[in-house]
Image: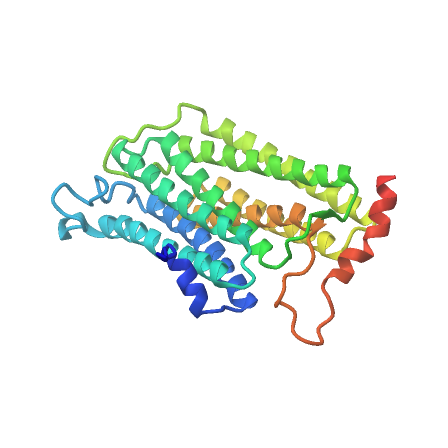
Length: 338
């Protein structure tokens, strides 16, 4: 009888020889979140230092060189360094994928979220190349940023999922309250999209040596629209905080909304400083970093309004279960739903 050898799966081979702890998997997922933020901020630094066309072509840096030449100066180095950080990002996400796959028992949703990050990185690398080849077209630049935000979204979800189990999601508050949290997420997404339009029509085109096409809209009017969305998001955040307090929601959920409120207020201060000082580069960079923190904070709000049990291996012996806060809010949530 002929024995057919099993197909060799490299990830399975790793899993047969290495068993990472649940904490390692969680930290690897957090590392992917951190790198997603770094890639956004460094991408902004490329634009703010006028280095968007530091490497004038893609995938090589010049027609004849993979790397920048001395004649290209600091702009070429900045642009090329940002390109190389993509490989660091891939490596960090790769560690998260391998760790999630090797962890026993295997949690397929975590692996899928890791691979989703990898494919977003690959596709956004192509978008970045198109950005260069189109001479920093503002619409392509905006799509490049939004793809990076998509990557950050998936990374945050994976990080959160490493801290919970795989049971069927169970609401901790009444459905209208959860719906309000998703309205808040949608409004924040529109706020970020409006911010990309502000960038596309504003003064920081990304390269000072060439004529860069800009979005043909009045920058001050678009900025006002952006500010209007800020007030909408701020109002929804405050309203959700009061609602969660009224229905005696779990303390973790209330804390997540309070954290979002603090980040929004700090981001608002940075935004006003930026506007009234003619958008200095360092403040714009801080505002870009703040937008990542806002998005992370707002995503954690609806995720805190449901629970899926505990993730095996995260709790040290003798440590009380983290579900007591969540379960304490169940009677109030159920009453609010009736």
